[in-house]
Image 1 (spheres, rainbow, N blue to C red):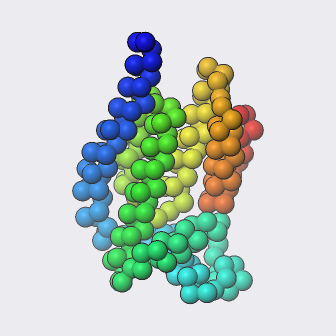
Image 2: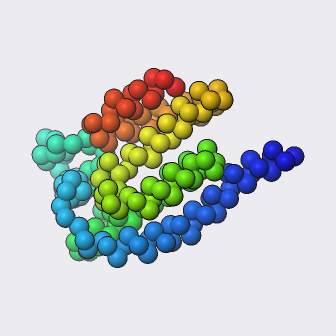
Image 3: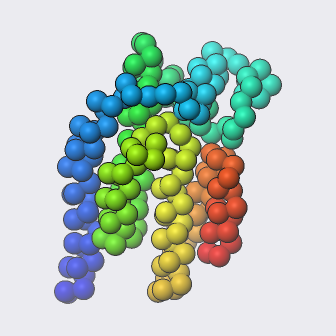
Length: 193
């Protein structure tokens, strides 16, 4: 009974803590939305704009990255219809926060309290490593950490479920189509699972 109680607490207490953490993060990051320069995030946003207007990636639009960021931006622009540049950048930053919240929820549900330390450290420091921008490098952290957690769990307890293999396949392909330099990492993690 005590072990079951601890397992429930370690899974759901961090979930309850995620909500106030994201309220704080929103209050910290959103006022800094105007403090942006154009890195690859602007390139992805412009490619998403052209895709939304009927152009084809790579044949009609020059794009020197993997395709998912441009299609993700196109989805955001189609769904939210930003009215100006500020709104365009804001909706992309809010989408990054929503994605990180969803992935952190998945990470906490799967790995419990031990991964909460990563979430706390990364989320409060990612502004300083451009993790709040619409960059693939800031998005692929979550699937890679999930896969690292699966590898850790496999080699410490040996207990993985069928959905772990399914999710690791999806996350490996997600990383492969998001950012080129991390392809070897994603493949390596997938192989050792």
